[in-house]
Image (cartoon, rainbow, N blue to C red; front, top):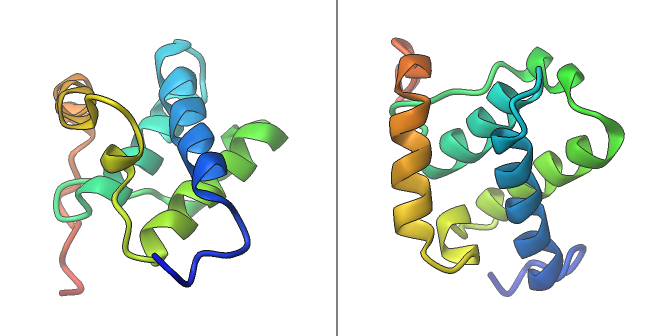
Length: 107
């Protein structure tokens, strides 16, 4: 994670929390927020259709990009928050219906 210099770890953590809040808000953006987090956590089972990012408002779009950047640098989003394993396990169960049949196909 030493290459992370554009965004601080605190900002990454805030972005993960923001996506968790957006997922729980029960809005049109909830599924997108869930898929941002789940695909960064487990892309074998979940994938984020990029066009769906348009459903996020400006702030949550930036948070989504931060989560994606965090993963790019090799960090896992569930490690950015307390009780991350439990939170992401619950997230996975709530959105199990969004599991991708094609995720991991490029591997």
